[in-house]
Image (cartoon, rainbow, N blue to C red; front, top):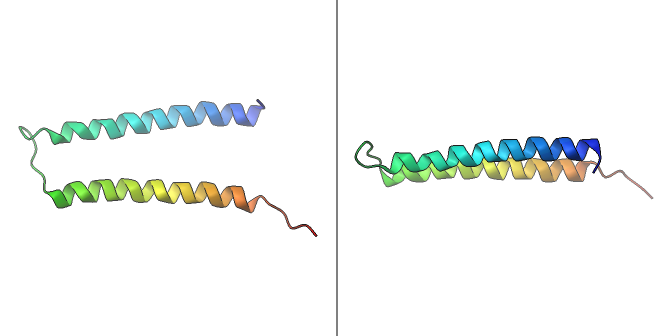
Length: 72
């Protein structure tokens, strides 16, 4: 593995694990002893998360595609 791949792997693993931990903490909001929420609020939370995930995935795809150069 070259240095760029190693850096990507190291940083990506760290960031993805942090994101997974934060998403897991959403479960705490499900405790009805402390919180009350509507179905609409819950849907809005997950729509916002999914929207950002979709956006980032598209950015990765575009970056990969844009590196192709024109050839005859």
